[in-house]
Image (tube, rainbow, N blue to C red; front, top):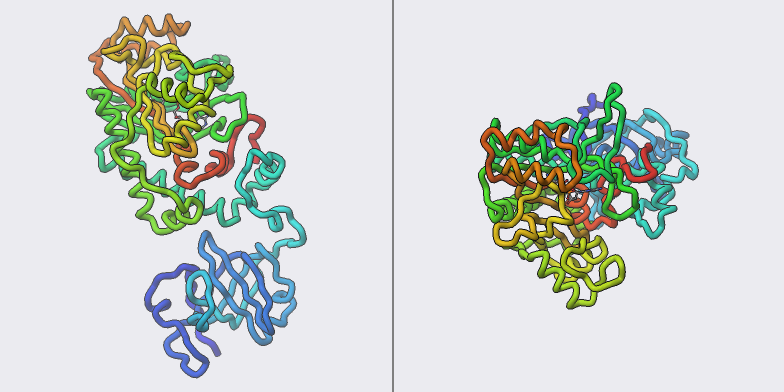
Length: 462
Ligand code: 4AD
């Protein structure tokens, strides 16, 4: 009789088990009999052998069915995604062969836990291509089956990296001594303009899904000091682009008693530290290398460029604005022009000092030029804007004037205005789109690929 098996994970690291791989029939050695569970990733028949790649989580192990085992009905009809238990000994790979973990399990027993239907299920046969908006039909078909296509290699790797990057932001902020808070998603104030608000009925009162937690973070400065949050933000974007979602994950921070230059330094420090921490994770590093082989850590210091100089640069290159004319001071730099500029300069750019007219109501004016604000967008090659930030108006009267200019009724903002009444301070912060950050690190065609279940105009399922 065979010894009872030890249950292990596919990527088991215990040396008592992994250090005792069997090499040959004649030397049983100290190999341990193990039991693994997972789903079939791939089946290949070769001679009398059946090779099963078993997948659990992101790990894959090669298992081999031989002899009578390979002749059973279950073995002969085995199909992708069926879940199995396989028991046997771990062996070294025969010389000249390769398998994911560098070892294989030679089965002496297996059982089907739950069979998959197989056949021509779209997700099994369709190549898990990137979501390419130039082929929206294929992308939509993949997204309709997102609950299944997530099982493919690239989507699981992207979701894994996403988790690591989010963790890296937490680690970086813990190191910097910035406190995490969790502002509400249901609000009654707008932050980034009325046109992208998701409105809803809140017990008979008008309210919205938050566009940004910024205003709430600002209220935390007097009680907690520097704060950050990683929460969902919602935007009713009425266009379909490669980098706009209706629901996205927003990394936001607010820093007290700082200057604009200190805000820029902070962004540089944070981004570099998150990149370093992410690359410390071997699985994430491998995925980045695979999907974005040319990825380079951003070089410091980041290029700092004033908006007015960007306008000159665009004019010099003959890149037109959305109306097809030369850019002039005061123009919004649209996505297409911004991408062209970022891709051509091909390094991280901190674009600063945008005109007040094209920016949000709360932004502080620059001391040396009243036409512009102390604002910054961080632009990355391949994506464009990944961060929007600024210093905030901290004078009471100036804020009231800003509401008026924007046509905002001040009453619902009483709690925000009060900050300027009870011990104001020069302060600033930013918001970073996590999906855009991932699109940059992993060279994704669209931010939709960086979401578990993307939400954008026309899609709220599965
Ligand atoms: O530039 P935005 O609109 O700035 C704010 O919301 C500020 N209140 C943030 C702050 O200072 N706390 O958005 C900030 C970032 C953008 O740079 C972009 O990366 C991301 O949020 N973003 C989106 N990502 C995906 N889909 C959308 N619709 C996005 N809108 C903004």
